[in-house]
Length: 311
Image (cartoon, rainbow, N blue to C red):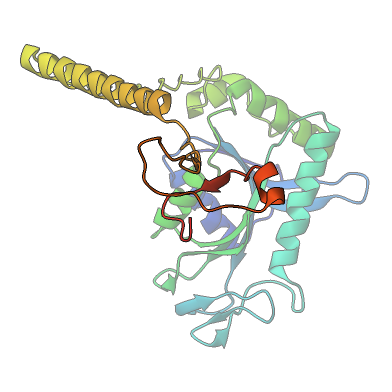
């Protein structure tokens, strides 16, 4: 990694250890050390601003006042602890290192935006530099999204290297020209002369131009299942069944039509009429005499129905 240190910077022992960690990393990147940002509200020292091909991160390095080893626990409220003991960091008492990191990220982002540079999503991390031989685990934890705590020294740089290579999941959009423009904007605002040249950035591994995005291959259509072809026997059987069904429907329809045509309402039987039998000349029966009035009036015909009594 290409490391540039501000002229006249006075680095403490943990900061020199931190710079040595950066120089030993085989990753592509640029680190500006002890940079002064925030010209309008008073310049503020930022321990490191690091560019990689995928993004920018702001680092605050902190050493320990005494040897501490154990399990690191970080909470949003309360002091940080190592194996239930407060972390004894080399910094003024009563000052929150997480607040210092947030302020540094904000200052760098503001300075880049005022110079019309797009920093994208700016990340940050507190780099804890323990005494050599001291083991602090976990070697990486998260304060909040975009802000992490990483443990590193020259004898154990694995987690620190992994963080710098993977802190941003963006594509390789930071080319040599873009990094040179952003670094020039920061160093120019602080009056520094540590901005690297374009050739130095190319030699450090930055791309001369942004790689073209790899086209996403079209998803192949799922194969269509071929329907089995019907054999000649199956086709003939299907036609026979269809013909039989049609004939059956025609027969049923004919029966229904015939029943409708032949069906008639029942006719009421007409009443049978009986008349009084007259005596034939050959009859020997005598006709009883009737009164004069009865002889003149003919008897009314009586209608009799079948099986009618008294008729």
